[in-house]
Image 1: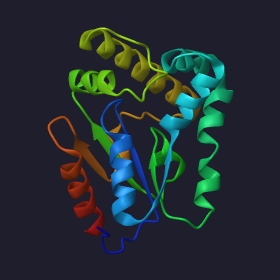
Image 2: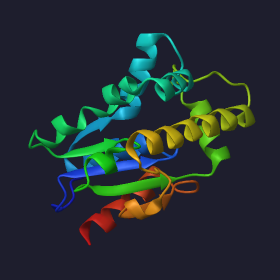
Image 3: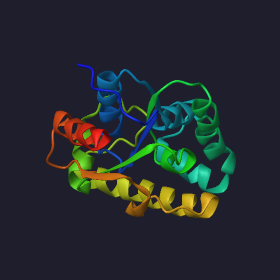
Amino acid sequence: MTCPAIKYDIITISGALGSGKSTIMKMLANRLGYETYSTGNAQRQIAQKYGVTTLELNHIADKNPDIDKEIDGVFATLTQTGKKYVIDSRLAFYFVPSSFKIKLNIDINEAAKRVLNDTSRTSEVQCETTEQMADILRERRASEVARFVTTYNVNIDDESYFDLVVDTTDKTPDDICDIILTALQQ
């Protein structure tokens, strides 16, 4: 199903780990006929390249700004392609200020359940319980928030940067896409 034209060539989706950024990115791109780009996928590939988990990569990036440059350096290229994109990235809203900026929030325990059940996340720390995964997600988020404030002087938890904030805890992906598409058409 294709939606009517919207005025944004780039839609950026930021938010908490496990909030559904990748799922929503793919669904929106499919509905709108846009291309996709995911920094989460890029980060997981870099973690695999170095033979570390994504949490360990975050700690490496805390001391080595080249990691973030490798992940985030693609945005200048994407904005110059003339293509339309839905981007899943914690910082794309910052690098592409003309985008429609979405932030997805989620309850930490629901996020932990989703991440634990996502078998495609092979570079994540392996946990036995939701509580353990929630602790890992908190640690990753704290690392990212601190690093992005230091590196870019931007707080990714500041909701004033975003055009739309959606809590995904109790919503289906279709519900979330419908909310976003309604906002995009207004």
